[in-house]
Length: 125
Image (cartoon, rainbow, N blue to C red):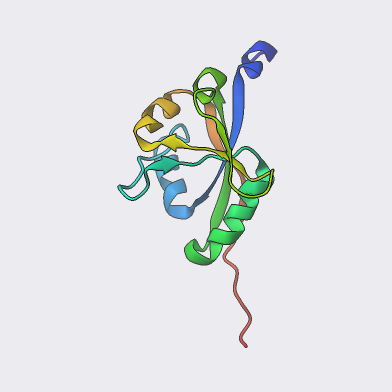
């Protein structure tokens, strides 16, 4: 990928559990699985630190967790404004579930796991 191609891409991060990562793996690490009916929005986040924080919050519910990184064509991501959902660095895109197939078509390269969070075992009290 040359420098002009990189300039036309936006880096996104997504915390996920083992079940979602297994579905990503089935796609050859090229696509996110369809959303469930109770999940009308796909929420990739703008930075690694926020993805780590979400993973820490979710790990108690899901156990093993992962942080992924992927690049999307800027022309696609520009259609969605970045939402601040807490602190100024807690930012994410809100992509409607019906646009997920189009997002997947705009992923350039592979979805990669950049961090893994093992199950935390609490000591007995």
